[in-house]
Length: 431
Ligand SMILES: Cc1cc2nc3c(=O)[nH]c(=O)nc-3n(C[C@H](O)[C@H](O)[C@H](O)COP(=O)(O)OP(=O)(O)OC[C@H]3O[C@@H](n4cnc5c(N)ncnc54)[C@H](O)[C@@H]3O)c2cc1C
Image 1: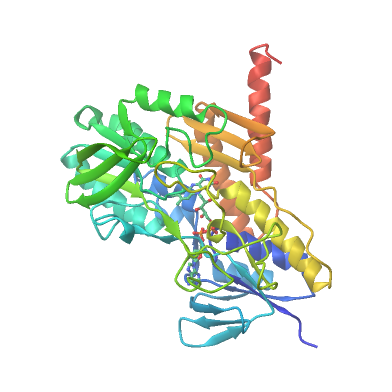
Image 2: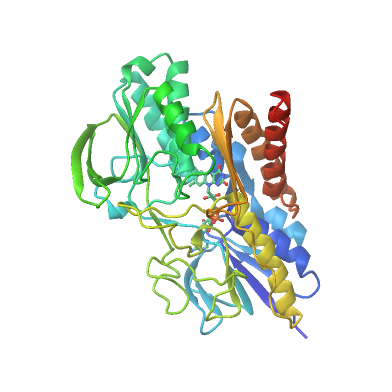
């Protein structure tokens, strides 16, 4: 009798570790196949470093076919053109078709640059969302440093991933100081968040105070409640809204270099499938990460539909970060293993958030358990150790992807960070 086939769609941060964990959880009871659109895995959290040449792109790449082969996981990089959940089938990009018994969707975001005229690498701003974008951003940054002018960094309306925007603004500040041209570069941070440090999470610990203070210390101005209306060569047009979502002020921000994170939406291969996705193309999932209508379809990572934390004058999404994604991966692996054995899924992911925002010479870290307030752990901190922690984490995560192990890393990181906090408090005599 042939084994049930589990197909994992997407081999980014979530899909890759999901393949390893699902393989281990269902060994001997299911055939596991990954469908990606690239043979390589790229460690996305290091993209901001690539954009200022603190990392070579190749250093954060893992070539997946040999790892998958070693693990006994089928792999194709041909890409998926369309999911057909009513037929348990994928159309692949080469015109062939692949059937599945269980599907795990981990396709990350489609980057909605087209929602703002002139936004993105095909327009007038750079991006760090993909490693090839970050490489392009590094080339433009080198050219910019020959002719320093104002910089605008931030996120567009509807964005959900704010950590990398702050990180990149502060990394640029550090790098410009190292190149001794910071004095020639006025910097502005533009964000739809209602306040600095909101992060799509209504803040974590004192991220408002910590990030405002960092930006003040580094002479970075900001516009919050910002809606970018258009970007032209060298000029960004921004409307700042008041609490009633009415235009309070219009800003024309000149720039010689700009990185703006776009809003995310679901990829085309799943967009508009009744019962599978919401209107933005994100995959609907119940508390077990299983689609409520197609009971053999799970999803994890950025592609999952999560409602915003609450109304804001400019739309702001909830970030889906590594810790949360790792908890989704573990839940999906357990639940799939249960379903294959004929049991009902019972594992619920924690959806906690842990984040390291590195500025090169310091950084801000936070742990939110659970991700949405009110929380049991609502902690943020700052210091040079954040940079060291991020360097260490990158090394461990890449090793995990290269070796195909399924040990959870983000949980360890969170515990270590809270441990550092306890140690600091003890040193100060507070605990
Ligand atoms: C610049 C940046 C920095 C970040 N930094 C951090 C951080 O420091 N800490 C943190 O916790 N989180 C961070 N995040 C958030 C999050 O952890 C990452 O976005 C993470 O990569 C999301 O994982 P994912 O698997 O959902 O999506 P992705 O990693 O984007 O993976 C999706 C995969 O699906 C593939 N795919 C897409 N379409 C198809 C198709 N049609 N067929 C087959 N495959 C397809 C893609 O090629 C990709 O490999 C960051 C995000 C960004 C953008």
